[in-house]
Image 1 (tube, rainbow, N blue to C red):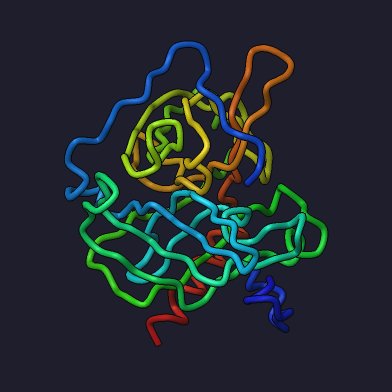
Image 2: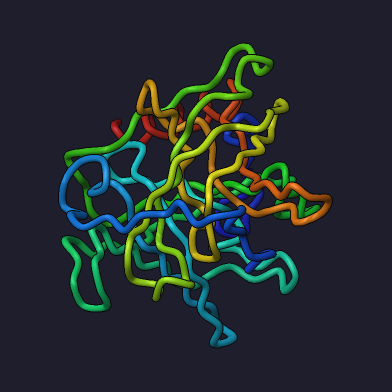
Length: 241
């Protein structure tokens, strides 16, 4: 892993192409962003030293850390970290939100930092506030049984005005050790949103991008595997000490 640009000694601590609405648009606005699980989801605004701003979505997986996409907080083309990340929880309009938290630490995998390997396009962002609710996480032990599972993606799509939460459900197309391909409708701004298993209500992936050829299109996320879940758990335990 890389922590704010510095190589970490512990190897175990381990805008992109726009996402697509596939066929008809099945996304629905979330009218009450103050109730669980929606109050664990934040609108991310990442500020860079060159004046650019990136938008994405994050989800609390413990009291004061969110999981999101690495490309939201680190520009792999410019080799540039965001200098500040703001996380707006329960946002429902430009100036309407429950809590505003700011980043205190950003962590991405060294393979994304060094090689821009999109199979490692995930990040952990520590916040300056603690929260009482968060979403659990897990992984499919048998990836061959992931296909056909219903999942949801909830985020802040840019084509709906940046500041409004939308949610949609669809099925997983298939999965590999590190990737989930799915049919959930998304758009730019949903980058980093949790892919949540509808049956168990836990995070199983992080939405990142799309494949628009060949037809039919599908969207792509990082699959939470045993390695990533162990990283998240170890980091959670570190914060509790």
